[in-house]
Image 1 (cartoon, helix red, strand yellow):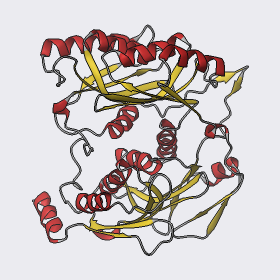
Image 2 (cartoon, helix red, strand yellow):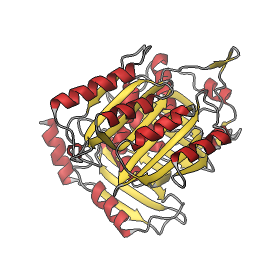
Image 3 (cartoon, one colour):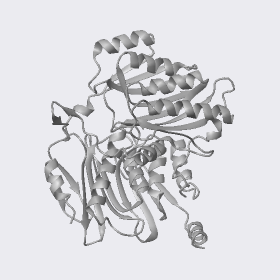
Image 4 (cartoon, helix red, strand yellow):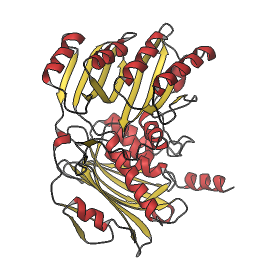
Length: 443
């Protein structure tokens, strides 16, 4: 009865979207008004993120059963969104009540998995792991059409879409699927996986790859810190995000503030994690400056209660740090553009492995017979790749196939001082990571 009543309320108050290109000088303003529902913030942010729009500011409010958010967005080069097709898509998609209803998997799909076989992998990360996985798939005549691979805190996760190399369709034969599952699980286990390696086949329907990667890594507890040591010293942590979590007694909320380097899809990653942890954002502010992002959320658990223990507070901080770090681009960016063929990914990753490269993150895509693959790599010790190694790899891959983009963002420190504006308070000066830790103590 409650579900039917909720549907009636939504039909009486359908979502309303206003897209304004006049009020702000340097951004398109998108306002979304709707009946509130757990997960609706994530799904709105996901629609904008999937269009590769950059959210420069956001104001979130969902008290009293009503959801009202305002987003300032631009395209990737900082211009307003003026493409009528994109504007129409945003309006129609967000005003479609069915889109805003959370699915059982918490995903909104981009591609029906009936067109391919979707494989989910998780296990202990190690040098050459992706190469071994790709070699197994190539030997089994599985062509990788799309994939996303993340690594974090010594764990690896992947969502891989494959088709049969002859029929170019999804693989449905149960015996063949069982063989794929067994061989990939053996690869993931390796010789010393302390955690159980997992390989599953996604059920039919719609799957959002990046949404699933967050869920897979969260379930795999990648947020548990693995500290590297060098000459007996714990690794320097001051390059990481600054996160505080404390109780606001005046409004009975838990307040989360985050300060980190800005990057694409940062808000999506944060909201994914809060949603998966069963928290509701009642109010929030997002502001991005030069290379920095400030986020502040007033949250409660879905049962209506704020965070009530120090252990829970610490877990939230760890999980949000993981959400920010999973997609952080480490090391050297290599972009492969060439004709697609069976075994291409296996050959490329083998060359990386033979040159002692470690793949930290990868995005694999094919369209119209063309492969466009992006890899973020370091050497096996996690240090930057040397120029002579890059030259050798480019020579082995072939002329004009591999484009090199050096990434120096991860070596830059955040400014020593920043300002965060609270919704229900005064300006707050952030000076050092130590001061943040002191303010973050939970009382």
